[in-house]
Length: 381
Image (cartoon, rainbow, N blue to C red; front, side, top):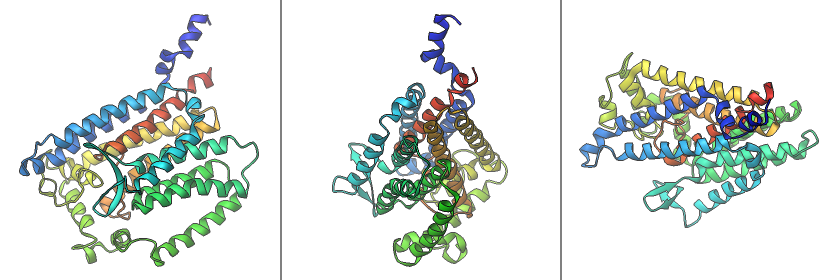
């Protein structure tokens, strides 16, 4: 192999040539589809309110474009360089969560989750999973000895602190996501089975305690449990789920068409451009549209799994594993809550739901996976 070939293989063009094309295409397709669905879910309502029908569309398109730039940059920067700043990334996420709970944070509808920067809102909790993934991955990678009880407790604290801060906002859905990520990283890090069993028991007891000691606010508890008996709460806490099922069911096989559908155009489903956007997809594009989207997610998750397998170091493996847990669970939870098989929690549908912070965070995670997955050529050589 000539020196010129080596340079090309090691340089930026070499990295680009090794990027997972299927992961790139599935991500771009889902994100572009999301921009269209945000537009379709909001245009008619905005026009009825005397606002430009392009209001959400333009912003979501900008968020998506910025996110793609972030994805590309992270795909081309060696993740080992970023790993040197892992604790800084983790610390910055904690500071952001603390700051948003202070007077500088913005409160809306009983929640304090945002920084208001002129016309832009930034939601630190959407970036918190990345901080947790980097922090735990670095801690595990820097240890020379197998994980003992002290290490397990340290990892639990690293995940538990941001989880509590997020739930305090309150943002129960993202708090659960952080808990899921922490649990999976513990498993991937090789925690002894006896500790995992103890953690499962403690987790079950903790969930029961949380449901009975008043840790959650009343409305949070009712929203969580409303899916168990939606008909009994159809006019109150079960309203979202009842309207969601009507919207998705009315789409039948092929849907009623973009910019159509009474549930969507008349806004019977709250938050349908954010947490409940899957209902607009179900009503307007029917079973075919929903199945197509889920197929796109299946491809994306499969390629994340492949990137995790291709990683040549524990840091990369854990980073992609955390991203896989984050994106995979978010899809399952979001879709599940709209059809009544999961509790209603505020988790965005990855790359689809309206929101700049979530879009940037998910695309950043895909960029990291592309970076780590690009090592496959070097591993196989």
